[in-house]
Image (cartoon, rainbow, N blue to C red; front, side, top):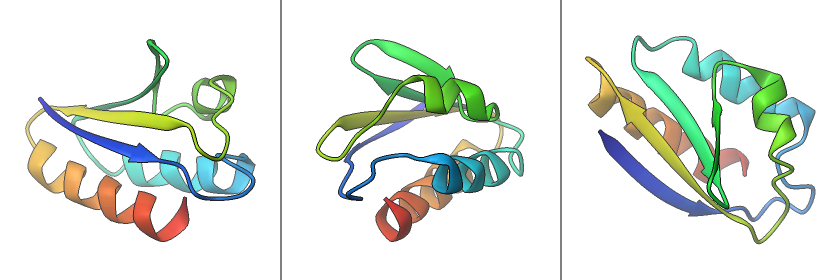
Length: 85
């Protein structure tokens, strides 16, 4: 399993547009991808799970990726976070 921690810098946190983009990105990988905040985890392939975490600016999240293409997936997820959130 690969993990990356990230502190959200977007003033609006993870709102609908970036959550939708994250789901689209995650669905492109075979690996399971989770977002974890304050001990609660959500499947990154389901938008309602991501939105349900209520991630705001300044919150730290952990992205967990596990599966056959985890190396590629974690690199893509990390780049997405830096560019969009």
